[in-house]
Image (cartoon, rainbow, N blue to C red; front, side, top):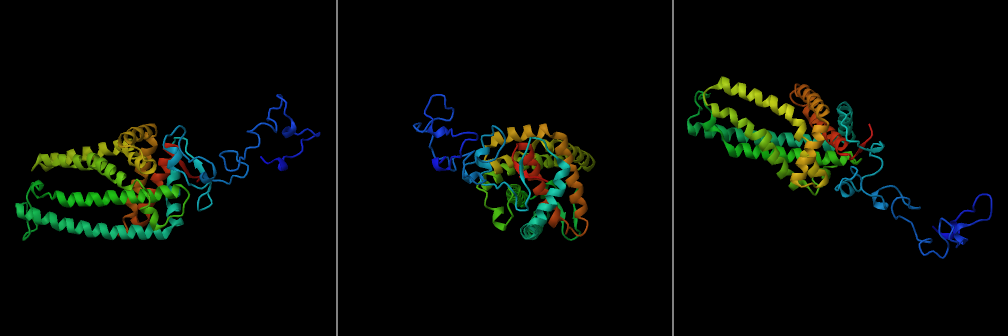
Length: 331
């Protein structure tokens, strides 16, 4: 504090700065630490303005080793004027619905135009992949282009290159939209640059690709082992889909720990599983609610997906911050 600014002590002429006695709890003028300049020195700085850049630590879960840097730079109020609060580890799935749509409409140009661009690219890649697959199947005898019929077993016509390229594209879209969603959870108004500015993008794409291959790629190859027995293959596929639905809450947040906090792969698996198991029913309800919303939105020629898909990603970032103890806009 500055000596000239020290107020008079109420009820008398006593001034702690003039008291050098050992009984002065504030320290005296001869105490070298007494006149230290506390401007912007952290919590309690006399002239500190709000925000981590002025002495406040970054946001994060209590005792979170990534928290001090993971959310640094976030404002105390979001772009829409909503106050940022810190998660308590509990997911509130229903709140995520209104938050997701409100976030999209707060920055419609970036979200909706971005979704449109992604839709065009995905359609083009899927079309090319379909032709590649049909060509492979025709060459292997699994598909007759003249009659447009396939053999009972189409495993021989499977084109792994087309599927890998499409999976890579889907994972890249998933991660870049999640990066923008996390910026929105920081209280920022989203621009196109926010989709690609996260320093952990590459690392997260690799991690998410591994998770998607384990949970979405390999299990779907199992029915092909049954060859021409399509009835059994269909039953097996239904059982796999059901199992993945109930397992999803345990791994759906893992890649966000890598993207948001730079966690190692092993740490992301551990913390994602813990957050998922702690909020299992809430995250299961979250998945079911948003699956229904996305399904209904796809009815009008799929146009509703331009809004619901980014809204889902915003909602996922919202519940992730709640589960991980990070910050998010108060709804």
